[in-house]
Figure 1: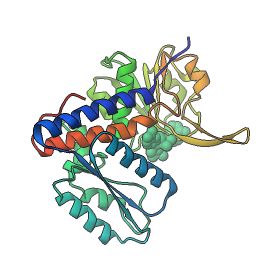
Figure 2: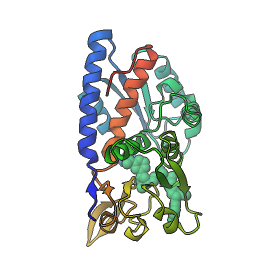
Figure 3: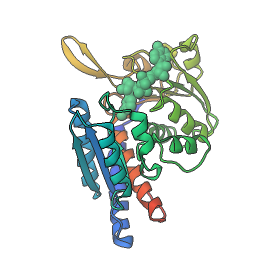
Amino acid sequence: MTAKIIDGKAYAEGLRARIANAVKELEAKHGLKPGLAVVLVGEDPASKVYVANKAKQTVEVGMNSWEHRLDASTSEKELLALVDKLNKDPAVHGILVQLPLPKQIDSSKVLSALDPAKDVDGFHVVNVGKLSTGQDALVACTPVGSVMLAKDALGKKLEGLEAVVIGRSNIVGKPVAQLLLAENCTVTIAHSRTKDLPQVVRRADLVIAAVGRPEMVKGDWIKPGACVIDVGINRIERDGKAKLVGDCDYASCAAVAGSITPVPGGVGPMTIACLLHNTVRAACAQKSLPVPEM
Ligand code: NAD
């Protein structure tokens, strides 16, 4: 079997086009222009690229975008003051504080200071709690994007499937497991202490790999026909060249799976698209408006 390649880049483009239509509709019917403020502290090169991409795509879908770039020496108090100002600004519907933060700042304190209604990254404990109790929540973007791709690949029906999530981080593993539970999957969360991981993965109709270990998941761990969503983004050097690879050994997994996300071009492009999606949802909730179809 050769797996169908799940084209996350194309799916994300389509989603952004639907978001742009929703933004137009909100502006025309209700005079609402959703807005996202992104805060970057310091000079981390990867974070700078992410923040620039977020701002560019926010503007492309017709939303307001604000970038707050603060010096690496910014104190926790200064950052909390900015968060407070953004919380109170009615034009700002979503706030994202780019992680990691410099070591003088306690990230959990900053994330807790965000207004949960504007927490478009879905990391605030109120949103995490709402997700795990089945309430409407702003949910972390990469997990939302991963489940959208799985639903698209599997014809929307995830009910009753055996899903194995590899990784239990707060950013990916745990929220993706909650989303799959809400889709009525039978969910197993595997992690670094799981005994006989290959055997656990073999029972999965849907595998979500979020480990951060290059090409760890091998083709002989995959049940024939399973859907494989590879969240991993790992930079390696091969034949003297820098290369991005996932947590799954793509060639051997693609030979067995029914469908698989490539790296790059799979889950990666979905994250920013889902951030924009969350910002529109947050803006509508703040104005008590129904969320347009996206
Ligand atoms: P993390 O390091 O916080 O968590 C990794 C998890 O993997 C841990 O829960 C750990 O228990 C588990 N793990 C580690 N070694 C293991 C092993 N040998 N066997 C089984 N489980 C093991 O990482 P994260 O933030 O969840 O990110 C995971 C991967 O996803 C990384 O490659 C990261 O770059 C990528 N990522 C991609 C996006 C995106 O596509 N936009 C977003 C977030 C993370």
